[in-house]
Image 1: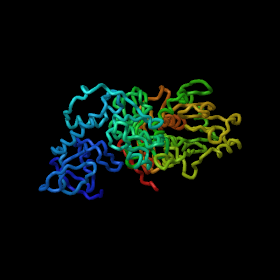
Image 2: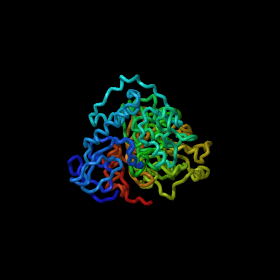
Image 3: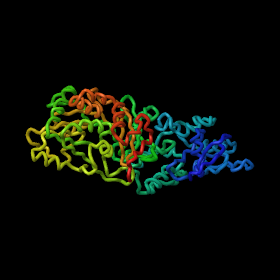
Image 4: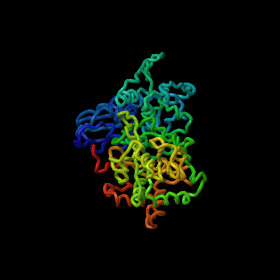
Length: 526
């Protein structure tokens, strides 16, 4: 496809297109009903199912020809007719063949509400025939293709999306058509292969008819019964775009959200389970001071008092949102302290997991909390200051400091204050612990490794009323330590307004209208 703009006629209406663009993309862009279950923008072309057949001709004097909309490309002055009689008849006949083999288990199928069979029938007002008289509801017989993924061969329509995903995206031949004992071809694993890689569950999202099933979601509500909220994965600096599916303040699953600039339409299996980490027993839910549950304003006082000393160390986290980091910068700008910023490492996979396990390092650089030269992998510098008696107070912001070189046995008189989500060793050792909201319980922004500003939204409420966003805690500390004039940061829209006024690269950014693809900031350098 090139950038030459051309004119074509779609169902009698003149529309704009790009030369070489696939007909199915033009048809879908103009909301004309057409089912193309084997087509996917990020996979190689196929033309297997035949349900995207349309009539097309180059000139008015030519006769219409039946073509596959998923493989045919646009040319100047082309005419497309999705209701061309011969194409409609062939589509309907092929659709009947798919229905003949498909089981009657819609009430159990997780694809209900998103199934192409439903969509095709409703969009085309298809009047088929009853299959109920032919037999009873078929029993579901799953094949285990991997640790988390199951396959129901009776629902497979032969679109080959799964085969092409393994070949095109994973660059591995895992699936193929194999003739079964009844003489029919069906998708199956190649001998000795299994779908145990970290991207196998993308096949569940890709399958248009529900043949692939996420084994972790078998006994959960169907997707159409869940609320979908846009979010961002925090497992690495890639910033995978996601949808959080929830209901009645409980998260059931996480799915990929398409962003052609970041993760395309894919996500890792590990990112799908991020919500489970916060559902375990290690979640911090109470405000504690010296072993007793206290009110928030009581817990903040000793932290404010520590700001008046010259022996304070602040350990920052790359998991903080841009809003958290901005209010923290406002606070620390008036406090004498040493800052330690941890960049967590992990093994990259060359795809959607980078070597940086912190999602918002670039945000901390933008907010002047740290410079690229001062980012560390451990806390040996802090350890040396403790041993030299130069540090008497540590404010740990969502970091487990004992995992990065700090000895658990500390000198007498050294106090730790912990603000975070996990009830870890640092929280248990701390004089004051303050729980904060997770990414699923908050609205804000991250800046990924490519300097793309991306927005996430609150999906569920925190476990109780003692848990607030981190930026709000910092704002209260700021108000207590400095002046009442800083109370302008007690609302999220005020934080955004102040960021656009004080951070040069955000001067032209309207946070309320950041689109789903995010915004690439001007100082991005590859």
